[in-house]
Image 1 (cartoon, rainbow, N blue to C red):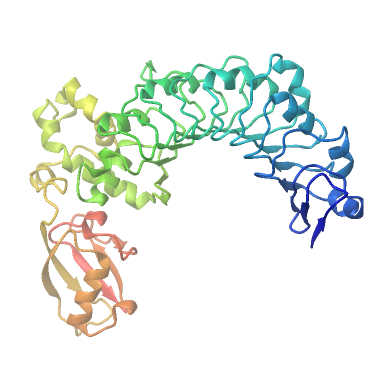
Image 2 (image 1 turned 180 degrees about the vertical axis):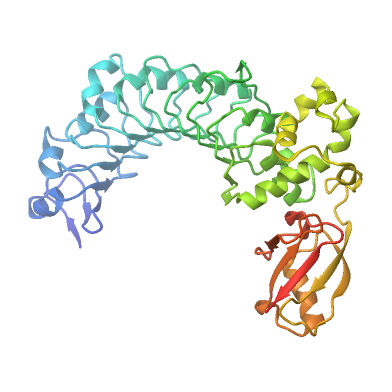
Length: 438
């Protein structure tokens, strides 16, 4: 339902009733729509030349139940004017002030009642500095989400007696260069989600106490560092110190281009961070983690031996230099055992992408079908293997179900369930048997 009002209003207004969203120009009372306005929970007045609250108390009388308000890209110039609006909306929980240029308040404490229930605040592209945020934060005693994207923020300071309820912080698209600046916010006790994508961060070092992290990001569950300058694996190693970290996004960083095989990069990250369950929005299943960690042992087994590592636990003493580069290696040995000579002598997938695997192809449900021996590159995807089998067996690839039995684990059958994954993803080795069913 759309109505336009002309000469009796300060501006022409567009009031859209539906899906509990209203788009207005200004805050003027419209008595004909009073019952509908009372039911509204969300209003957007983006880019509508709003500069103040209008007539005293008019917002509260017109639409008192608003919980989500978009005031982005308007003409609001001070926090006092914003507070005049927010004070009339007692249930206000989400407020977007992006692209307004707000002067700081001389007495922010006096405005806190206006934002008593505010949980989500967006100040993107407002030119605000982190120091100004900390000065204003006393106004937002219940804040849980804070969005500060694209503000040219270069440095951070530790929040003291403020922002202690914060669960999500977005400081993407800023100019933070030193990753250690993030330590200033690492003490926020409830912070679960941090977005620092598209900054210029290249390194970070979390302080360690008695072998584990001190208080750094003790609740952090999700971290996004897309589009930074991360080029060293030491950055990924540091993230393993965050005990609650389950999800990271780290695309468009130089370290992701350090090897042409994205599957190898993914395996390395999974093996280096023990608590991860999602990487770049893709779930890490237990089978994938096991394969990544086993391959990691093989991949760097020779370096481990050369540095002083030993299959004899009593003589296993790898150098500090090796453990700095591979801090989880001893943990993986405890989990799976030390890599044996046969594993270490095999060509490393990290160095050789197309090693050939000698595999036996069998059809367990078709006893008349003779086994077939084939040499296949370990980079060959399951989908391409199905295409090959279609030509050999004259069975449509869409009907094929593949699994394999390892020559080292008799009786254990592993499903090749993802058509887009290469054989090396499943840690297949020479002598393994591919089982084909349809």
